[in-house]
Image 1 (tube, rainbow, N blue to C red):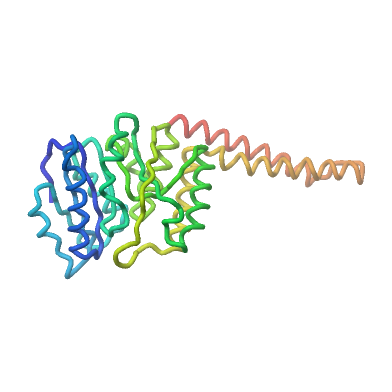
Image 2: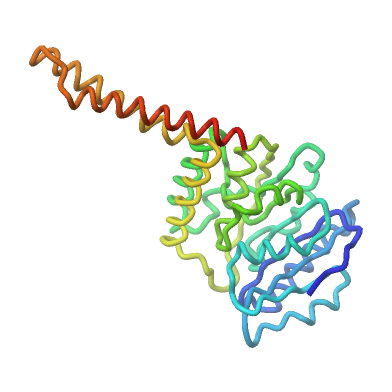
Length: 290
């Protein structure tokens, strides 16, 4: 299905997978109410990500601003967002979930910063996140902040606004799974785009979550590491090189004091540290070139 170009300023994309129609309808109602008294023109794009029998959202198209797109099979959160972006035409993209976890009434609050930013992220308090995900989320945000060399408050928040033009620049990097938002955050941060964080509430999900705490957390860490290597390789190579050099110098000093000569292991560690640093420097030059 192809959506005709519309003169809207923002496209709100909502991926759905086996969400109750009443919950999706409530989400749409919140967004409509939120933009009622604003200067923003909007459209809402629902992507039914292969929910199957019993999840027909076609009746929602009776609403003025709503469009429905269908995946014949479940492709993943990231794939649904990408489909929505491909069928949107507004200069700004907004994303949210259809499960009642995000305060959709806060979209106008995020949009107030549109003149000053390339992306506005609705950042959740750690205490609002389910307990089983709090520690992995804390570590993941710190890990991403280190690799990006910038403070990242909420790496994978699913409520945000961003420029369509910026999102399209990194299209080839986006995965089909939940890591799309993490990828977008790392890509935007690593390339100097202006990101503004706006604190939001985060509510208990309506229905069952499809996030797997262990598998998806591992996937997030892997993707963040890959993106760190892609955009800021010295943040990965540098500490490894420094550790090798430090071990080599320490071992060499010990060897000199105890046995009056510097052993082969000490020299090997120092040379390895130098080689790793030079490799990281080369990777840094290549990444900045592109």
